Length: 411
Image (cartoon, rainbow, N blue to C red; front, top):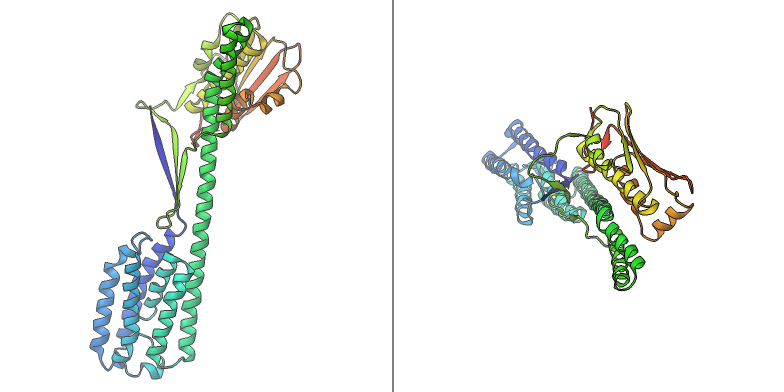
């Protein structure tokens, strides 16, 4: 029986990379239009044409590079910034009067895209480094720190550092969220395994311990060993199971959570099951079963979990009420929920016994019954009066959250 691995990737920065891709294209068009409008101002028009042609080719060929952090390597960032700086320093060669009129550089605002790529890739420190180089190049191109140059440089510097800082905070938040989802997935898997183990192995070990103690002799020693193994297994179940999910803090593509889903059988499970078919086998000489006479449909996973909770309640009847106790199972199909009541005529549960058992690590009611119903969005209510038996009422809504986290409907 195979288990399917579900991969969840969270990346709040990926939209920023897509925006950067669009920004580079739009600013390239802007730089070209700006050069066309001011073509009469260039003493060496061929310098501007050659550079803008190279810039256009570079922009188009490198679009995949700025589609995500993985492809945007340090080497590419260095080359991209070099192109921008070259365009700034070539501006006086194309337009000798650019220094006097404080006009636009050849790459214009396209340069900011190179700086923003540094911010998205490495955070605010990388952004500060790139924007500082751009500032130096602009001052060299102008020959002095004019007011317009200062304003432009300051704008790029502040904006890129701010964006770099936001990206760093977003990555930290992604890792925190991924870790929280990992812990939640591990906890749910641990509780699921604990319920399954309680329904099988722990029940057998507890029975061997009781029967061995009653028989005495070598059987008593066997019972003692079974009791020790029961305690050890309960401890493992409640605290030491291996988590079922892993976190990858891959800043290139966002934080990743991989969690193991429920078994993936070769034959797909039906979408809905009739709860009556799962509960009918429990009927016997000492267990009565009453149902509405019409199919009681629930999503398959929910129906199996509810049936397992009923089985756990009947196991408690056999273990704690004795083999002579009678049990009754009543199924009620309400418009919005399914109610299953399990009642017995045993001696009942002494007050405080459930809390004591849970403190000792005996989590039959807490996990096998209440835990299953909680995962389904339902409730489990236990009513017991000493000397008058015990009643367990299980309620599951028709629209349930299945253990796989998918919503399902019985209709």
